[in-house]
Image (cartoon, rainbow, N blue to C red; front, side, top):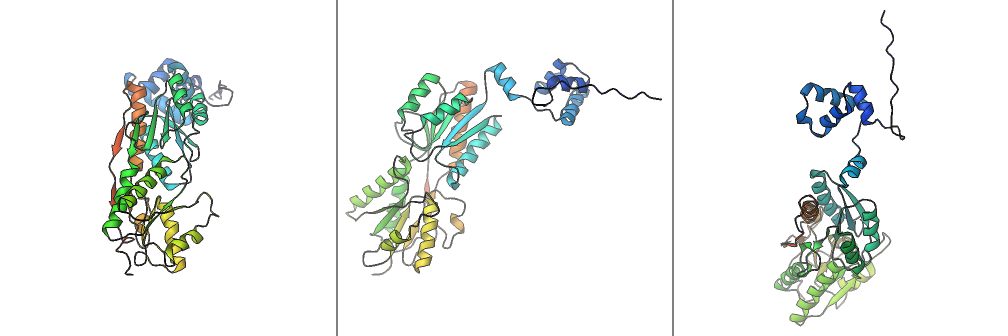
Amino acid sequence: MDKPRKTQKKETVPNGRPTILDLARHAGVSIATVSRALNTPDVVSDDMRRKVEASVAELGYVTSSVGKALRKQRTRVIGTLLPQLDNPLFSVFAAGVHSALSEAGYVGFIQPVGWDNRQLSKHARTMIANGAEGIIVFGRIDDPDLFRLQKAQKFPLISAYSYHEGSDVPCVGIDNYSATKLLVNLLLQLGHKRIAMLSANMIANDRQQSRIDAYRDVMAEHGLPVFLEDIDLSSPEADPSPRLEKLLKGENRVSAILCNRDVLAYRTLSVCMKLGIRVPEDVSLTGFDELEYASLLYPPLTTVAVPAAEIGRNAARQVISYLEEGRPLSSYRYDTHVILRQSVGAPPAT
């Protein structure tokens, strides 16, 4: 009669997770063999590797990234500072960052910091203190304290989404000024003269500032009036209807509205429907960013196509290349173009 097999008590770390010692005992091999099977599997036999893999699966063993980080003085963590999380554009951008990090075996911290890029250093400092090896910032960096922190800590820092010629920090993204001029000139070519712009979060927001500057400059070149409205969409309770109604009705109504975000155009289209104003027969409407639902609206939305996911991937890959190979960060400007859809037409006859 076989004797009962004596169960060997596991030696685990304080949180109860299996250790590499548990794994070696379970597989019946040395710790060195386990290490080779996990880190350089090509140097161990197939039979040995299968034993270790079976024990990994049975015990639920997970390699400790903390241990590796201590040994190599690396964390393979990159931080991203975004204005907010509950915005489709930032989600697309963050997905691009994540895909590049995942491909390279990195992980990421994401921190919402609000719209004011003059207040970034405290968030970056927290990320660096918690192991981030580099920082990606959405939009232009307007915080001198962040530059001082970067100089002192010597971590890679890159600005993404907005491209600014001659920027003090490498930036990858689009020229918001030039992209907006394309939209304004399109409407002028169709015969529109009374064109309004709806903006949001203008304070310390380089994207909105550049778009507003482009709109003002083009309208001034043609001697046309400026109708600029700052629409608050920071809360679900914010209702732009009264201000939009002034632009859409009455003797001084406009014939076209430029919305500086697709989300703002979605809200404007909803208000038009509520007021019985037809798009584009009564007013033409444009957005900015080419978000997922722009082509599914009725009518489909004319907007500026921005490769937000690719911009995120580019920024992340550059930071990774700097950390892995010492390759310097560089600026890159992405082209944009207008996607003309049915939300834009000729101005109504007067």
